[in-house]
Length: 242
Image (tube, rainbow, N blue to C red):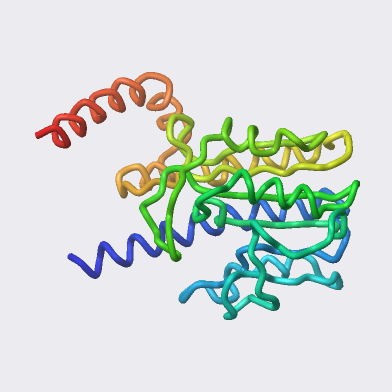
């Protein structure tokens, strides 16, 4: 039983990571992201080597992975909150599933804004519905509105989520220091991304929904999900209080 739960957790964790990196892929395909490209939080944990390497989306471009420790995927040791770069010196910055591990995330985003060039781009992803994962610490969970707030200094920004609308699995955003018009193809690709990763649950029962005909899942979502979700919350609250 224990091994089964561990294996299931690994499968779901890999699904969540696949969702993150597909968001990065969509951004790379729809925007001319200039190099050098710096990734903050590039360390590939055990079991994720290669799988979580964003540089594969940017062939021929200078890509530097940074983190606070050397390891797979890391080219330079850098602190996302105190990067050591000069102001307006970096073209593109990527940060995937890192900001939840920072005690002061707003300071980190402000630092990214500082070092980006006037036409620079910042891509960020994080988690909301996720277990505690201390690498080395785990401080925060982000709603889409929270991510919008973190990107408010950017002249143009875009934020979306995947998973349950009431409890998203992944939140993702992109900010530009200059005003741009977001292309319709990008918006279309994002809608497909949301559809592809609509169900990223910790519950095996919800995971099975991915293989049920859409007409049934749509009926469930529109007519049954919210009432059942409220019942579930009441039960969980009683368990916690008890």
